[in-house]
Image (cartoon, rainbow, N blue to C red):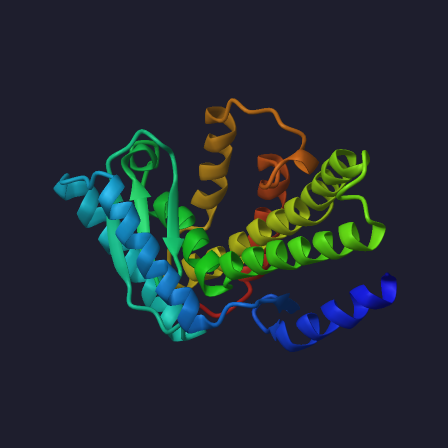
Length: 257
């Protein structure tokens, strides 16, 4: 069984793993950049059908201004093949995201709690970093490989038709979720924080506002979930890493774009 898994899965890893120079590690990505951008366009259309756009001129101008500054740095430093677009969604949700291809969405709920452009740049820089680093495709690829491995193990152990089938499904699901998918998801968040701060720095935003923003999020968040049970790092650990990385960034040259 072990030999079968290696025979089938090794070519997938070998052909699909490429080193990402921006985060100094290899990524398993089974989706091409062109497919990724097409999926982003499809997702954008679905979002615009279901979500209500804000017509608030102040919010729209604010998001456009900050997003354009961050996008300019992204183009200069990372050269993504993106067509940037910016949208403000009317919702109480405190969130923002960037689809593959550079489609940036910010909820009015988030805009109501940020104190300045620098705090908004913290969030937009983070979300743009996810898109640049192709975290969405990597997450989908990990899930695909995990699903293939599960099917192979299930067939090899012949548990699907036995009384142990439900127990196997539960054990494998919990193991892959908390042992693979969640740890990788937290890694993605730390990487997006780091690259997002770099984008902020090169766009000449105040990095100290990133710390203030996450401190504010600690106060707003009502969740108290152990980190290993979450897709995101704890706010405290995130702030600790942000402070360390800010010290490093301040040693770099800063010619604002």
